[in-house]
Image (cartoon, rainbow, N blue to C red; front, side, top):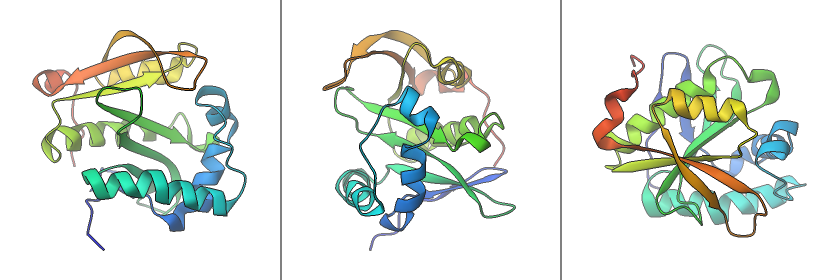
Amino acid sequence: MTDYKTFETNRLILKPLTEEDAEFLLSIYNSHTWLEYVGDRNMRTVKDTREHIKKNIVSQLTRLGYSCYTITLKDCNTMVGISGLFDREGVNGIDIGFALLPEHEKKGYAFESAQRLLEAGFKDFNLKEIYGITKNKNKSSKQLLEKLGMHCEKTIKLPDKPTKYLMFKISSKNRRAYPLITI
């Protein structure tokens, strides 16, 4: 197996999500905030989630060298969420995404992990621009994308989704518009 990059911040470890993380990802996919703001992925079993990870997440990691990462607290080794750089259908470029278990929201973990992955996207993976998409009603996600230095460009429709999404963008040439975490 290839060794893929793991990232750290002051409080977090971001490691590539694997099939062994299926039970954890299943809990994210079925949390009330995920269902409200992202939508139902129809994942009901660990087996279904393991197949999804293999087909979608591990395959992108193998192809591009980055994908979805678990967010783990350094001080207690507890997984609290996911964050990643995604080659998503319907987005002409790479999309940054994040989700936390509800009990770990509002503690800065999504921002800290997304900020680290933005830097990795530009520095380690040589991306020229990164997008962020969210539903208009998801005020927390919109605020986080703006705090990252991203700007809303337009609304888009994703394949097989009835909802329109706001599309945010940041480019490598203006990435210094946001403050970086000391790592």
